[in-house]
Image (cartoon, rainbow, N blue to C red; front, side):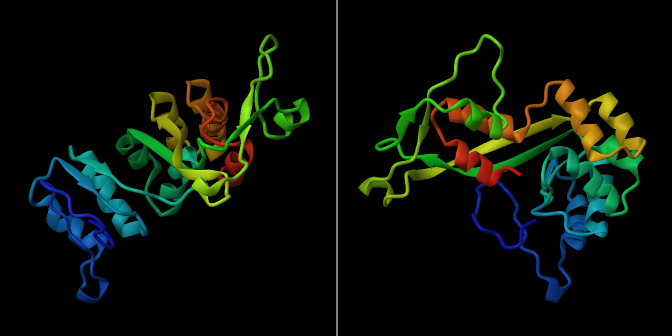
Length: 215
């Protein structure tokens, strides 16, 4: 279900919502479930009704994937509960949450290598181990290939949170997004900024660009 259908994909049944005709995400989802799908992709969960039906579909054996507008992966849990979904249903239905930001990719033709100062790394939240040397990273300069911007193309920064038993317990207890994030990081979740900084070290983007797209 999409609003609108942007790309036609072979082998996938796609439905475009039409609010004027009464075809909303929620009403379309009810009809789709009667067709016994294995996987359902909902363009966006915008309201309580869509969220409720999506959760119910997930609890009855369907793989449901959708999007929510939040700052990070742990905030998706509190967003669903704020929509009026009972925490125990959210905990049972969620398997994993992916947060994503698109960052501009440095132009391969004109990016310039340099060694950042300690203050620059600290202000960016860049974490270095006690025995690690300051890495050589890159900054944009600009050329005819990238229209003098220093960037060409996009890369994605990711934060993947698996919903473990401990996180399920926190959800049921209505814990804050900060508490859930702390537990997720302890269990191995890589925050958006850390993933961005790893791509800085790889020479894919700049510190300034990561700080621009990650809160």
